[in-house]
Image (cartoon, rainbow, N blue to C red; front, side, top):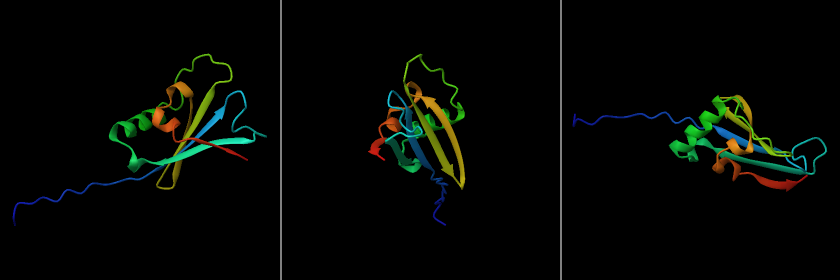
Length: 107
């Protein structure tokens, strides 16, 4: 043998769904005419971004929100191996790359 080692890396791809809710117009609420959603696959994220997502999900949405009237919140869901975990977080605690994947659409 030539002294080569095989290194196997387990790639676990998960789908992140990001929804912006609340605000003055009540995005995402009952009767809303605008839906703000986006999605990302975790394998497209840098290691730092993956850590930020993990930290956000581990926080269980317990980040302290500034007292902003009609502020946005984000609902982030990760589906991995058929299981989905969801957290809601105030806008200021959501990493920019997650917020930027959200697009508005009329419903």
